[in-house]
Image 1: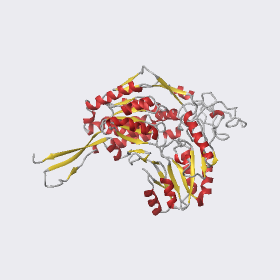
Image 2: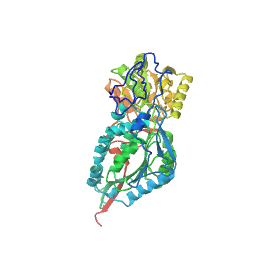
Image 3: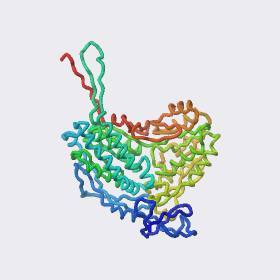
Image 4: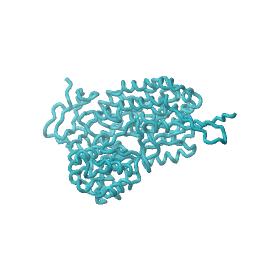
Length: 545
């Protein structure tokens, strides 16, 4: 009979290979029917966590490329995608490289220059794209499973959060609604010197290379592909080399539509493939979400034909917690939770600098420590698992290196920062870390760690808090926690950042999101995205001619 996951000891799960169906989870996995009390959560009596049964049940196939309206088996190099929870191989994918990128761009270029797509009437384009929304909804469970097998995000979050397939379907629905509303303007005649009438038109930007990150492959696929297609662009998508499964499933959903060949294409591969797209003379625009270092490389590569760029890059966002906040406990729980649960701090907008007033510091640290007690590692398909592993061994070692640097520079490590053993020893897990008494000139306060590390920086005055928040190379997001409306408005306007939340923060598809300084160029969300995927053309008529 089906049984439920067993919660015992510290709630780290131990799974036997008995093929029992878990009634809490979306797919078959294994549970321990009779755990013994003396088994230590990280001890040697635990068998290593494995996702092989789930992988095999989903019948994952070698990845293909979708170019010019057809799926292609790749005759060339391939690479394995490794699951970060266990470092097991999930599937192999095509290393498209320069050759694959050239083929995809050529198809997209033909579809834009010679095909009907850019010139299609708004009604027809919308009708052709609209079924994609319902197809994503229909496949949302499978897409969520694949996203969990991509990056280890707990299935509960993969299916029910802002990075879920349902959220992606809503993003498509939002941008498809803009198709028959993309308009220009007319301008009053400026002087009597000439009888000229000026007007503007928004035309599709051209061939778009959409390069996705690993942390939210489903959501970012939608945020880039939906507006590009809505505006009449043609698209070549490259997922992160760490997360190909969900993106290829979404590509399959789009492939079922009646889009003209070459309008949508997807290639897989590593850095070589991404740079081949970024530097390709046939690409008119690059939209990229990822690290500032790669963003700089894309910027340099795009110069040859002055590509249009939308770059959402890193962040070192500050959350300012004032003594008049309504709940220090809620603020501490939220900020520590953003670093310790969900994607374990692997989100560019996460506030990783908590700038806390000295008078409430002890209370803040206490509640942050209490929050971490709720963190559970383990099988990402277990509903009790709260947190994702780190995406790769290399990134895990990088984060542990930052934790060592924080100690050496004098920050006080209150808890965490280690790597659990036992059944989790084969995966890329890091216990959430909190540093107190951090100075803003310390490395852990300056550089983006992209992991489960929160740095708490004390302040005394509002001016000092603003100065700390702005003393950063980044400017993506941030938060202000206060019950004083005047202060909230004043501080939010004073912080130099693309987005600021007051007593909370969230991103939605119809509001712009993006950064300043090293956090990027351009905005994604709402009309700002439509502007980003179109070129403004001015036409003037001589009414005397």
